[in-house]
Image 1: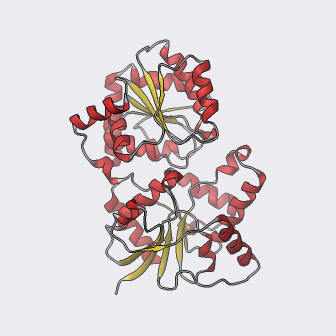
Image 2 (image 1 turned 180 degrees about the horizontal axis):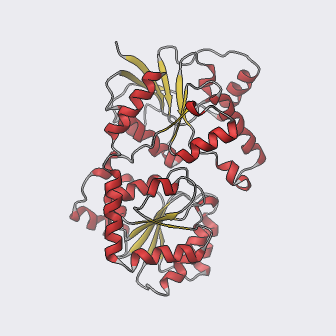
Image 3 (image 1 turned 90 degrees about the horizontal axis):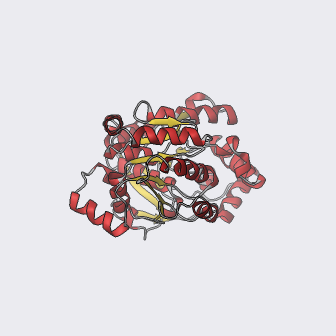
Length: 370
């Protein structure tokens, strides 16, 4: 008899990496055989509808979260929200899980507030601690995508090592497809992409480190004048500051911000890019690095936290707080086509085992243990 599995698909497209991670997990579950799967989320979301699972409407506002957390801490039991399921899986946290009797696993993506408390208001830091400390007290398993995050969870929350399982999700399946040259050139023309460019897909949050990247890129242009920088991502808090820096550094003709870009065009941008550059000050795992690896695009990335574990010898690592280090890493790729080709091949090799099928088997084993 199939196990009834409820998956809480609460992330939205504007959630960025958390949304992509959710879709990767759902794609992997299509390669499992032990479960009768029901999604809890938005029945009008075409990405969810396209997966073919039944979808029950489910949202969780901040007010609902606050009620659920407060009731749990006061030992007031709310009504069972997932009575029809045998086991639950949450790609990101949900406080409704505090009031279920069903065994569950959820993903804790990072504890960034430990490393950069200045990026969070005091109330945000308290909220994040309370949410995860209470969920970790009830979860049968917590999923994390790197050993760095597993170590952080153990150190910060004092959980037993056996509770956390390291399972990195592969990027979305469409990046496995070969690029059609006609489609690529059509995308280049439509998006007005230059011949040679660095690609940085990231929302404009402080920790994404756009400002140091711009300073390094300004110095790179002094030596490689035909290079450009293409940015994507929603206009979060630092957007105006970044655009002001573009003007101040006289980079208007060399830096393009495309805003939100659909997945088909993102795939084309990766394939057309000279390199992916990832200067973030904090990443538990970087989905763009995996996406670049899949299509053989060379990678220059921050050598911080879980990134060295993720990249191995398939990219050039740098100190994200050093403009000179970022510049040197970029030049190692753009000045040496043979080195760039070798890095691209190594990236592809690292992705050969990282498939939805393998990830699905890992999820199936973990969920059966619950």
